[in-house]
Image 1 (cartoon, rainbow, N blue to C red):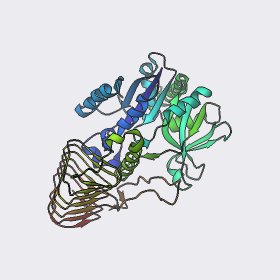
Image 2: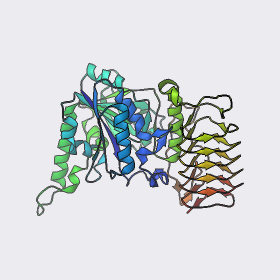
Image 3: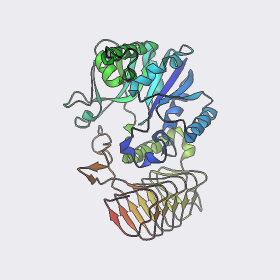
Image 4: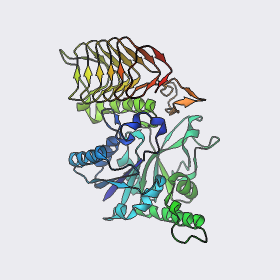
Length: 420
């Protein structure tokens, strides 16, 4: 028996994902046509022996999240439940707080996945490795170049046994080119070190004149409090993958993740990819079109385009490397490149919306996506263009590398601007 836990965080995080996270919880943002965490759930549901999937986070259980959970349970025929933290507890605090729920039924092991990663999720391979050599912690690792590895948790392994000898979260100097993917397989005994951290936190934070539980004791960081402390003690091992992997920290990285998932659909979900048909729009590369969207026959879509529910795409529209969210309208002869068009937005005739991609270096096989902030030194950085919810872009407007927030109607050209 197996379980899976998806750590979805909370609304106080994800600042680099704004303004997209203003309208919908980040884990439900559509990537390649489906909510971000649906990719995780699909991968978990395919593991033999999977009995339950738990989501842990600090989001309020609002209507969109509740509807998603109900739909996921019906689609995958698995219990999918949300466990809300009483406060943000870090990457490990929720695991310890809900330990009774996780261990109910006696699972032999449980997967732990961060919601903001894109991967092909080699969970079955991790499970095989775990069963060959059972240890409390198994981490999924991949490689990055020397410079970008400083932005991740770095792993020094024994190349013969794959034991993690040293772990440093975002080191200041180069440690290793093996990085933590944020996907784990834990044995039930992995919760014992979390208990030790909890008890130590309680002792450190408790004042002599304030008996009882210190509120901050429940905050546990897997990376710093557990992995770094236990490395080299024969408890943590790494499974290396050369499959697709990227973080989803910013809007630009969401577009990149959409590209990766659309490419995977050729093997995993070919039914989700649009096909060129007589009398239909021209499809170039991998494109997802929601069944309720209406696309004019003369439109040219792709590569790497995702079109959401109820979208209207007019005659002569050109779409490339973009996500169009539900309810948006692209009027005749618009051109949208490297952009995210927000919910219910309207782009007028002959308008051009273009962002600047910041994809990994294609000449470096170890290059990773840089999830930079929207701003640096008080200036908006060149990046993809984001059109907020219910924005109206009149005809013949040019927008480059800009962020347009909700309820705005524009009437001129913008380059590297934020319009509030």
